[in-house]
Image (tube, rainbow, N blue to C red; front, side, top):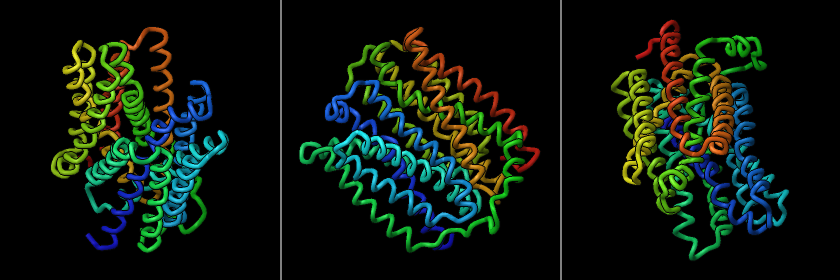
Length: 388
């Protein structure tokens, strides 16, 4: 691997690490926001919803931009946007500025999420799935490390002071991005709308999008509803429920480290089938467990089973559309994020109408659909590329 590629990999790891910070930022500030502005839970929900809407908007934008203009300045822009938005959260005295900052964090984070994945795909000579899995590890470190840092420093500094300091630190990757080289833009002319329309009609990319719709949905409800499930169904204490959620995230992150090796040695298609079965095993354990220990085991299986979905399927997208990888990644990311929002909303409806006990039923339904869709993805892929 050339020095230039190594530096580009570091840039991608830094970007996805920052996105990990973005992903958990609103959850960390929401209790203080409710107190500071004396708002209702409904309005707090509006504030929280601005993050995924921002991520969705960023996911629309990044693909065509990186294919036409390259990675450097878009990555710099997105890190600066997140940096300024964190300062906005830390120092805002108006709810409007706070809401704007949350949306901008989502927007910048959405660009970082998609563009770093496309970048890793572009600079990988092979083993795209394995390299994307390693990328996912850095997201986990960012998402896991942010609340840990605030927890450790909260007795010395206020939450806003810590968030402001993290914003200042982000100036370091901005400087780094200025001084390294990235792959040249793939499109020297205007955006190829004809090729884009052809891509959106391609059965393989549509099927991959459908798979990631449910993959993202399962990850979303696992992160959003696990603590509520443990509280209402397993009767776990709040601290135990939060610890269980951390175990799920840690399981997913550690599995991606292992996948970085396994996907270089074994068939990614077989690994993905096994992963869905492992996640389904975790959901079954959750469904029939009545003790905290068994529930923890189920969550560990679930996290491990969800680890390969995005790296493997995005690896296929990168192989299929090497000449417009950014746009292709943007297309499937938008579908995935819509799935996250719809399935999260569906879980809320199910919880209200039928109770939290059906959390595991929704997990199993989604995983079953993913297994069926994956079969057709592999079948279609083998007509176009070599699938191991």
